[in-house]
Image (cartoon, rainbow, N blue to C red):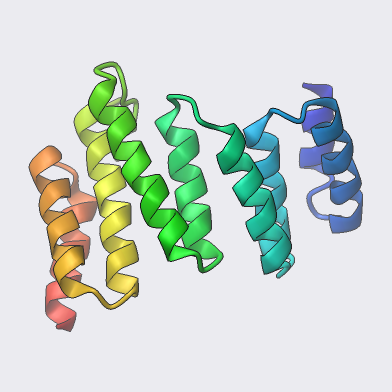
Length: 168
């Protein structure tokens, strides 16, 4: 806990933050969250190649049932320009949520906790946005369909789908 606080406080000073991340991953090399946070720092610093390597390390470590961690890694992979890894990770999220009836916990706009339906809606929505960015309108529509079928009240998916249709 103390080391995580030090890292958070040093985020504005990238060289100092790197030193803290190196020490943290040496102390806890199986902590995928640390590797992912370090990767996020490197992408902010425009070190895309290093960020991808750190992200891959996080992915290799984090093979558990925490769909949120895998989702965060998928979003990061999308952000660093690795759509294939992002797709793979989004699919892993879907599998995790599908096999875990207790998955969920996505907060709605009103702040209420929603169930696994919104978890699926969130993941399919993110996948749809990835496909939209890749220029694959059919794949984006399929993912939006899955999002809205899984979570009919997940308004972000409906809104984004509407914007897609307006653009094409």
